[in-house]
Image 1 (cartoon, rainbow, N blue to C red):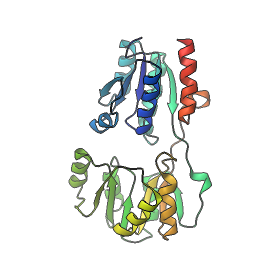
Image 2 (tube, one colour):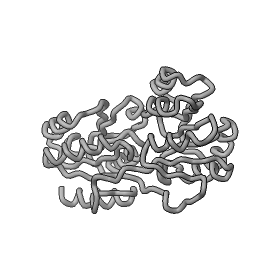
Image 3 (cartoon, rainbow, N blue to C red):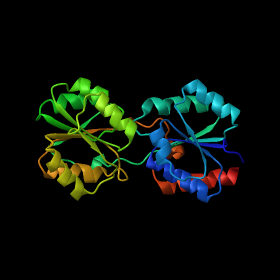
Image 4 (cartoon, rainbow, N blue to C red):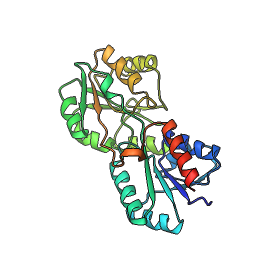
Length: 261
């Protein structure tokens, strides 16, 4: 077994947890991350770490050169283009593909101030109805789109405390009072105090699931009478037995893979 046999794709805490399961099972693998931030989040895993984005044809070449037999797509739930490229590359290279994605929590929470939308443009349409201060807890990737979509608002960005992200925020015109660099997930109590401190008039977030503290982000917002806009996830491209929505489901899939290896 070599490091290319199994490829895990994703720079998230979920991807790291999958790698730890592979470590415990003695499986050699490579973790592919897009950015240095993802590389840092990988921590002390035993597998090889490859840093840098791969387009579809690059991925096909990598899978072929490394004789990869199993790919686990644990990329961000909203990275739809990445997941599509992974699916097409695996199909072209004849490699088995599993998709790991934590389940949503949207169905269990309803409120007049809770808005579910499919994308950024729709979120901006709703945010324009409310006050000036818009808190974004959607990550750093689309900050330029938020800036373009809500030029009349004061945008507050809660982002990871890493240098390249802070530099990106500053480059987009976020001032020191508009950047909140911290690493979650956070408790409901923390979020309640944070919303008061930053004086948010509306909060925009994503359906991050239990591991991402979705309930802890949204409920304090609603309790404080603050409108909350949630961007729903794209539908997964992988379905059936290869769509894994918990660490336990991945453990079962890993057992099947080891038995067939």
